[in-house]
Image (cartoon, rainbow, N blue to C red; front, side, top):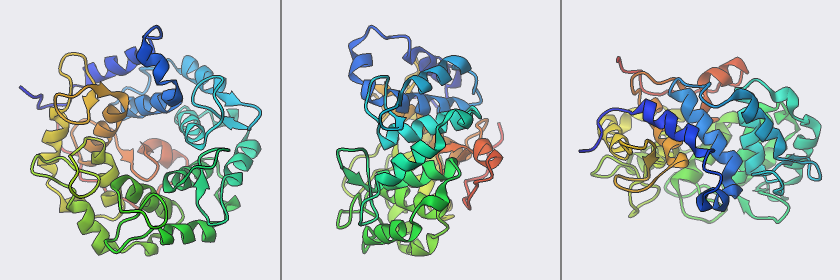
Length: 326
């Protein structure tokens, strides 16, 4: 029988155990996502009310071991080349721990700004892959570092405009189809830049609402399967646009809870599949935005604990559903 409540204690243990299996093949095959996984796990723990479940000193030491001194930014794992995604995860982890003084801000800022292309989009690293995800990552990271004024905002917003589609959504690059994850990164970047005037709110709101399927779960684009991670990608945008009431919250909560592993903890993409920390984080994030009882608030713009963003004075306009009583 599928779980009907959030199994917080099991999820906390699941996240704590992830770093202990260093002799497994899976651990080494996912090294390119290691610092991202630490961020996903830490945010999930914060939202579940267990911010200290991972050792503070060990976490910070690991983050700093991922520093790529040649590039002036962070890699995904010690010895890995710097990447903008890994760099944001490092910054987010340090911000949660109020340890941004450990960042070489001038060098990291220069690294990020150098990745912006003439069109306004950002590359992920020195090899040049471009995507609106990397644009959002740059905007998010610069905001957290207090360096957003260094960004060419007009050029950045101009590229997002190029990625807007007739249905109100946004694609990964100019001309690409709308996708819920790309909708999030564009919408959240515009929120940070105070340029939500670019968004066709009625069209995008309905496009997002139409992502809900009969199971209650959300998909990323038409004719695709539902997936727990879209509980964040879709809901984050809806909360920024103040359209959270346009979906059936009870059915979505039921879907997310049904994807839990009741024995080992963790959340999967859909019921009966293998769990992972990515879907655990975004499932918990979705539940927080849905007002699930007992959880801490998540800021959907930065995908960070709301208390951290409030402490930093970076909160933008967004509205989650009211927190339900226990």
